[in-house]
Amino acid sequence: NHSFSDGSATSSEDLESPPPPPKFRNNNPRTSSSGFDPEPLIKGAKTLNDIANSPHGKNVFENIKKREDEKQSEIAQKTAEFNQMKALHEA
Image (cartoon, rainbow, N blue to C red):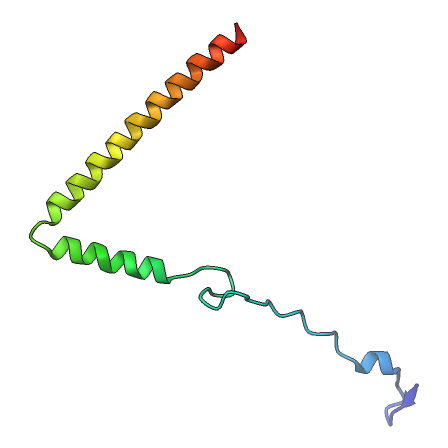
């Protein structure tokens, strides 16, 4: 205990500040501390801008939509097959 001129006594524990919180270690330098890597988003935005400005941009988006529709129909077909096999298994 130390005595000060105002008569109050403090211990050495009162003088110590709490330890700082541990720092986040980022093992992947391409990402921010939250783990978000903005590089693919930036590249994607640039690519979309290039497509939109090209004379064949509309065709590109139509082809992408067509491929996505085909993928969705394949998924629906596989889901139907799975449900059929599940019904046979339950029976």
